[in-house]
Image 1 (tube, helix red, strand yellow):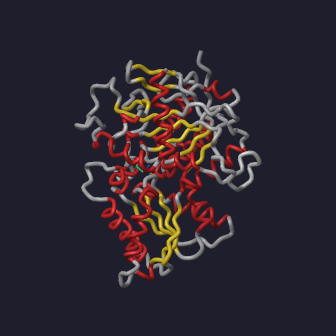
Image 2 (cartoon, protein in one colour):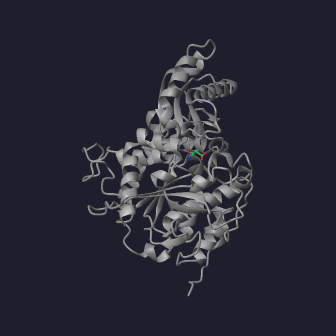
Image 3 (spheres, protein in one colour):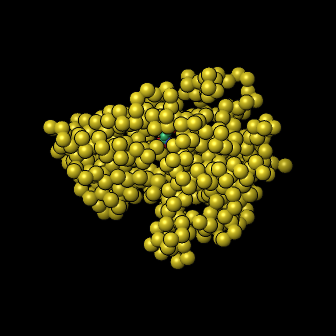
Length: 425
Ligand code: DGL
């Protein structure tokens, strides 16, 4: 029998656009339906559960790498200072990349932020639930562990979705907390920025949301610091170029040159004279190309008229590192750190177009067609355009796989060992 659900308008107030999904998940507490989770799973001790991390695709694996490598706390005393042991050594992770519905950064220019917000909440619900799709048998299974905390590794998803997720967790009365890269990135600015202006390089959507200027203003303002000028530049291509997406012809160096120049140009046009001295790498992929970005700043410094707009030394903020610190503190505060023994298997999932549907417009390489992807509206919870399957190395496009293998060694090791484990099950 279903538990009657009474959600007040106040409880749903912040989630306009994602309201249907909040009510839907509340109305299906056994978690068997799509976009639902088992509420009873959260009436137990949560400490042994995995930490959920999600992104629009595989870019968020850079954030997972930062989580896996963090050693800035003493694991026993929780005091600041590394102890030679990774801070999350006793944790397991569950990663989800919404590869079939990405890039998230382009939904705002298509006028579809309502649908994007629903997608982001669906990502959270997936991690909270047990349901996943087994492509071998083409059936849904309900045996994945739920998660005890949510990390939004995606800047765009944090910008558009973190408040919805917070409101939904409250409406569902779940003892789960959420950490996002934007607020953590703002704390990074607080830590490294001294004087001058702050630049933000992110997706077009993240910039359009204004989330970084707002978070930086609030964080520094609350700390009693002068709020710096923030100049943003959105890039529609750089993430794809970094992934080696064949639809982009340009090289990483060429794209960085265009985007960094556009940022400096936007800064000049704002009329602000303070030079850019801190850059927030506000997209999951951008920390991977920090040296290329820095090389462009160095070359622009030699151009007449631009030198006074750029500080001789740029401080870089990688929000992933600050997210990792924040997660550690929040887990400790909530009393949810995993004990020895909870370090079992990690799990990795990604979304694919639903193979049970024959009506989906697909591209030659099997992805959702762009026009279809960016024309959808929220509220149609009866249809599943995409399903979430295990992310095996074979399911990751080759160029991206090479990027993970060479640049994210800890993630690559976990991904391979998880793939081996699943085969031997
Ligand atoms: N993960 C996204 C971000 O950090 C970049 C890729 C996308 O647009 O989906 O904003």
